[in-house]
Length: 409
Image: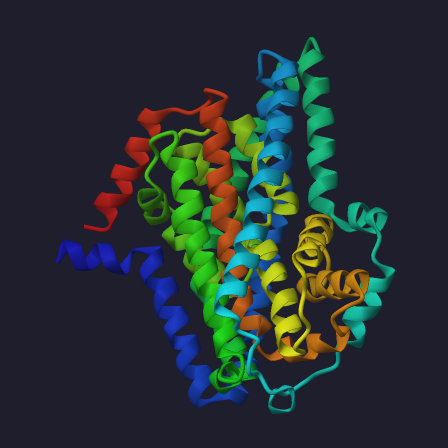
C-alpha cells in the first residue's frame, strides 16, 4: 500500500501519464488535441516568470558570498572554454554520423510536404549579434546579476541587502515547487498539440533522419557526457535518474526552459555550489547548446544528400566553422532552429535554402531530442566545472541520489 502511495505522489509518474494521454488524444482526436496547445504554452510562460528572478538571486547571492572575485572570472572563463570544446565535439559527431548513415540518400523531395519558410529566411537575413544580445534577456540578467553581486561583495553593509534577498529567494523556490505540481498539465498540452497538429504519419518520409538524429543525441549523452562525468567519478545514470522528472517535462513541452529553475535547484541540492550553478547554467542556455549544434550539423548535410550535392572535406570543415559561430545565436530567437539553418545555408551558398521546407513537418518531433540533450548537457557542464573548481560536495550528492532511489522503491 505504501509503495502504491509513493507511485501516485511521484511527479515522474504523473508527467509520464500525461505524455501518454497527450499521444493518445493526438492520435485519435487530433482536432481536440491541437486546442490543448494552450496548456503547454501556459505552463512554459508561468515557469519563465521564475527563470529570471532565480538566475538573478542565485548569481547575486553566490558572488556576494565568494571570498575572491578572481574566482568568478576564473569560473566564467573555464565555462566558456568548456562550452566551446564540447559544442565543437557535438558538431563533429553530428557530421560523422550523418556521413556514415546518409539519411538524405533516396529521399524524394516531391513526396515530402513542404511549407512556407519565408519567415525563417527573412529572420536569418536580418539576424545580427546585436539583436541576439538585445533580445536575449537571460544574458542581460546574467550580466546584471554578476555586476550587482560584485557591488555587494565590496559593500560594507551588504548583510542588510543579502538577508532580504535570501528571504525572497527561499519563497520563490517554494512557489516554484507549487508550479511544478502542474507540470503534467503542461506536458499533456505540449504532446497532444504535437501529435494532433503534425501526426505520426509525417515522420515516415523523413523517418531515417529522425532516427539518425535520436541515435546521435543518445551517443553524445551516453558516450561523451558519460566520460566527462566519469572523469570526476560521478555516475551519469544516477544523475539522469535524479533529474528524470525534469527530463520528462522537457520532453513533453519540447522546451528546456520549462525545467531550468528546477535543474538549478537540484544541482545545488546534489552538491554544486550556488555561484557555479548561477554562472554556468544560465550561460549554458545561450552558449552550450549541444543538442542544437548536433541537429544543425546533421540537417545541413542531410539537405546536401537530398539534393545530391557532393561536399568536399574542406567544405564540410567550412560548414563546421560557420555553424560554430551561427549556432551561438540559436538562443532567444523565435524559430531558432530554422533561422540558424537558413543563415548557415545562406552563408555556404551551396545548398538551396528552400530545402528547409522538407524539415518543417518533422522539426517539432526532433525538438524534443534537442531540448533534452541541451538540458542534460548543461547539467553535466555544471557538475564538471563545480568539481574542477573544488566547489562540489560529494556527501550531498550521495544523499540526493540515495533519496531519489528511496522515492522510486
